[in-house]
Length: 323
Image (cartoon, rainbow, N blue to C red; front, top):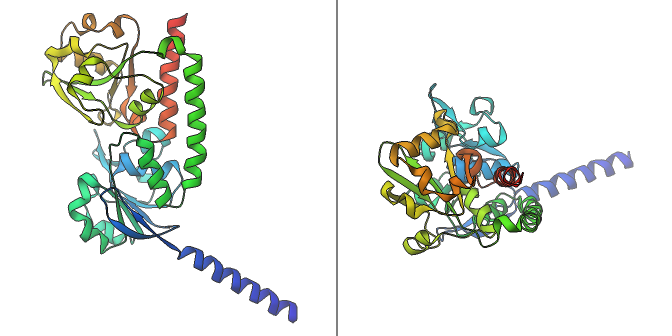
């Protein structure tokens, strides 16, 4: 009988201990300057931006209860953009609540009963008070000089900082090895990331955009003179006239296609043909086989899986050129 009582007391103490841990909170300051008290180990996280936040939560295996979605053509079905391409996760198979485009469905957010809501400064700042009445709400800045700073914050807020730090350490080792192995192709070289705006005679410069530019900056590649003259270092980018195609020359040129529209690598070339005929002759990167076409969803998400994708694509092109 005494052993049974001791066992029951031990189980009760363990239960109370676990409950205490589950209810622990911490005070954080989000990217909009809001001071918010949140659980140290949230169990039901609502993500209001699929590419910027849901991808990070999937990367650290955080407990997602719902997410914003995109619409995938031609079936017009809810779609976890980036999550599907990077992690192979289809919305229909998840059981997540659907918060709609850019997390705009307040009723669905409320119905999902989150214990933490993560939105963006751009889309949810005006809704912060309304969302905070549902659950503690934190906002992130989508574009930062170092995208991993935002990743670290999100991982910390959801109790997964140790996973981030481990993976970030491995990433830094990969970058160091890559730079050492391919010094000739990288040292002192410039890059540009741009996509054609088909039918608009414009080219969109993506100067700080997702993981792709982060990886390239970490490898030591720099901006070409045109970007230095026309964009501040922390600008996300902007559209420029396709007549400026010659000004967009760089040692390495990266462009992307989107699987959301069912496009493939060939759509990049078709897009440039449309907006800037003869573009191939204006870009030495194209002539030197240093023009790389990437899947935008795989190259954009702020995850270490996407970082590996970008590094692998660049390495394959370097090795191909070395033959």
